[in-house]
Image (cartoon, rainbow, N blue to C red; front, side, top):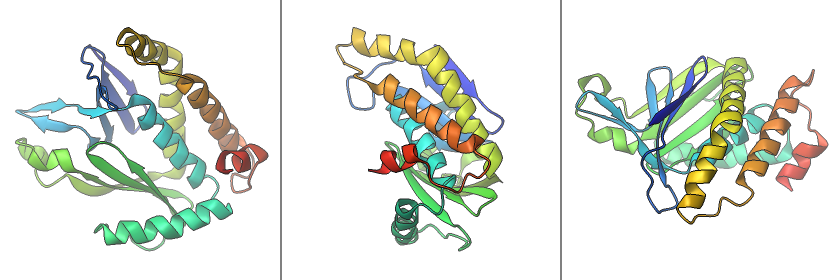
Length: 216
């Protein structure tokens, strides 16, 4: 059974019926509008890629925490480092990004960037390179833009829905397969609440105590 967690632009689909005893035990699809960042298309049908569901949401929340705090010393250092990595990996950044954050999945990599008002996500989905679907030929690598506000709101929306409706199901499946989820839920919940507070602050650019503790 596939579950769908959807925002205005971001959509994550997770297959609850397939489990692989590996660090990436579930199959998932992650799209932004009509761009497939995680997953593939075969014979006219979208197919998931092996993934760690918690990591998918953690990466997105981590990206938001960086995009909302561009002046934090760690974020500035991270941006310098990841900008160089992105360019060496063949991504052609436009040059006006003030934050560059890298998210890595099993067969995909993306750079979530911010110009201050615009979220720009550069991605390379290696699995999609081999698609036999004409509509996705040559679209394994690209960039998608949306407002920073809508990107953060979407991440918060889908993270909250995951935590409220599906995290317990994922944990149960992990336990049934003799995999201890540990404190993944508590960590992700706390991280979600932290990013939500950052977003709701009148000035998102200032560093909070909890943010500093997160980078410690």
